[in-house]
Length: 420
Ligand code: ATP
Image 1: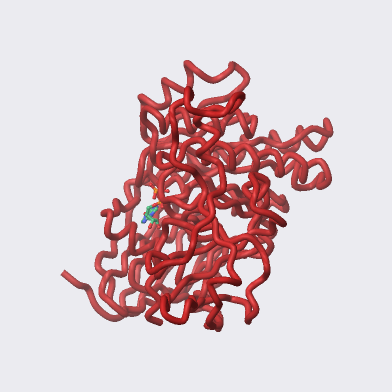
Image 2 (image 1 turned 30 degrees about the horizontal axis):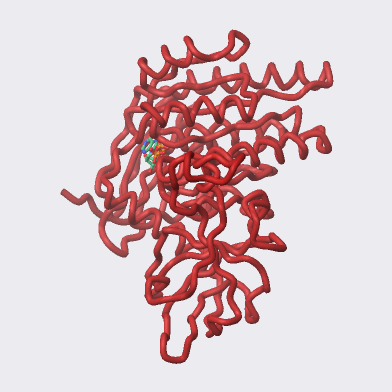
């Protein structure tokens, strides 16, 4: 059932209005008429219209009560009185105490990792905690290890961002100068060795940067992770915890994971169990694929603020494309001193062919095609929109005008059909 047009909601203190926009090409406008409200930790300005489009799943929370108006068709819209927001606020208060202590003792602030299975609200809790921290005048570092969604850059990457202002309601955190590393797949399981390599690298670079930025260092780090929590997925989490030397792990809605981490983490790591919000919406694999696609489209075309990407042809001969991971051989067939797993982080040259059509390529800052390329952060991405085998050219969609920088291009599994 679709509810229509203008709706007004009176929210009691400590309650939230949840709504979803589902119909194609639909737009819903939200406005706070009186009182105070926030959206995933960002304060809403009274009287200002905010637009939400197809696929949006939103909660407007109020600590003190408010009146909110929605204009447009929502799939569902209801007020929920039961929310875990007080618990999340207490977590924020505890982190804030650690930041104050870090400032006084000249040590680093809390490094917090948010874990849990798929669709429990990990990304949302990360956003809320970052917003609360920045609203207190902190400058926390946001790390996203969820290669399936790619909240900081495009899917298939891990990244970090210094958060200097609350997330914009419509566009999320400002994407200025993110630190991004290439992975190239949608799940850590597709190349565990490579995933661990780049996670360790990201942790190393953040630790270095914190040494030179006291404000960021005392504000701490908040890490969002993938929803893969069993078997090798669990190992991936414990590896990340070690690499980032986490102090706090927030486990959302999974007692088994909570108990495993309590058992396996060193005693100084606080493992905290948190309930999930009843409002978190489960997404089907096709909805996940759509949101991946939307992330890539936003990278090239912008979200609210439009970008105008360039499209041009490049000769095969002018390109240096590599993929990461050579076919793995048994240890006994490897040259002396090399392990079979080393092959998984090797760069292998790729000669252009029709198979490159619609693939995303990461533009590396690396000078040459060796393993160091994986340790270099990315300059950006391009997408192959067409391959002409006769003329031996690729048509490239790029945020920058030609020529393509003369650097290493890293091939991603991710595809994007440009029909903008
Ligand atoms: P993933 O497994 O993809 O990492 P996740 O655990 O990070 O998922 P989120 O992305 O935080 O989960 O949440 C899933 C969806 O639910 C998002 O679209 C988010 O906007 C929505 N959502 C989160 N909290 C609420 C809420 N309280 N009310 C309504 N929608 C919500």
